[in-house]
Image 1 (cartoon, rainbow, N blue to C red):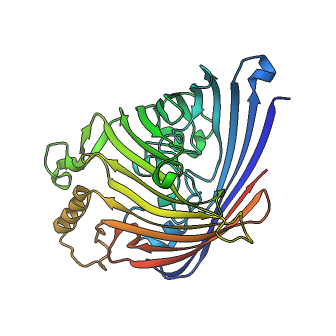
Image 2 (cartoon, rainbow, N blue to C red):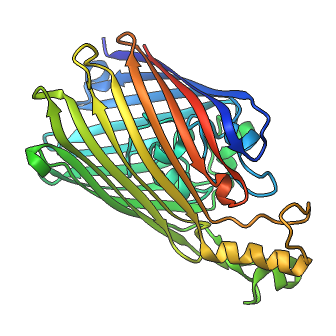
Image 3 (cartoon, helix red, strand yellow):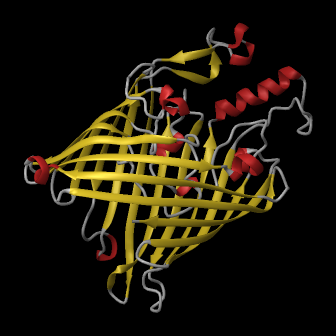
Length: 399
């Protein structure tokens, strides 16, 4: 009749089996319920190739990385539970009109939604470093991925069956991440806009004659951003009277995503072996996380007796900007502390590395379980924090 209802449930559970900053063992969970109504406006209002989509989400739980793995004197980088974040609250996530034109070559969307389609990647791994659009995770706290929705417009044009380009404009509004504004639709508090652009190549036959997908993109953010090291007077910020940072009128970043099937099991396209890599790079002046990078493999249907199960193996890292680490060392020098165990010591952040292996069991058509093991080196990017082993379980249900 033109109405499609969908409900999904996601649960990420995690247990700190070894290491981390706080050695007290605990179990934490984070989950999300999402309800989506898609209306086919061709059937309902005779608007061809058009739809109207509304999504509500509800998130709950705690983050094991914040609770146990990191030194709480310093900020968090990654997370062992990708579904955690943006508050334990019910939100209006999507409210958008979408239409395809020119024999489906052109697609545009307008309304409230996030820039998840740019640098798009799956969330089959539980560790956040391997999940979703990396810009939303590592550009800073002003690019909002799902479940945050903001006023936006995007346009995608298929240049050919294998090539496409997409651009967008998204409201940058820090008030949207506040729980009290979970249903806010006004633009009050807006700082600027984020302008992403991306080129997509999806060859049917690339390496080894198999299909792949390759994306390269960048973004320009018009909102003001603090320098990671300099103060308002040009000195290092810890030496600046009043402590004000030098302010920049914009910030930028770029990314790539590469996914390539390298083999088929029993010549079945549904049982492919795929290798992938993705990375994100921030500008040097304002990017607290300088870069993010991953490499991994997904095996679909490794066993004849379980053709719908999957195996995932991946490793990756995050690097805090050198100037951000330099500022932290300067603060310790000015405070006259060098002992990590001194309560006044500000831990110096560098690189955090993560690895994960999972086995995904397709229990039914609507239920998937993915037990996993994660190994996190230098949680929070602090060398003095012991590397952590985390046991996890992802639950994914769709109705």
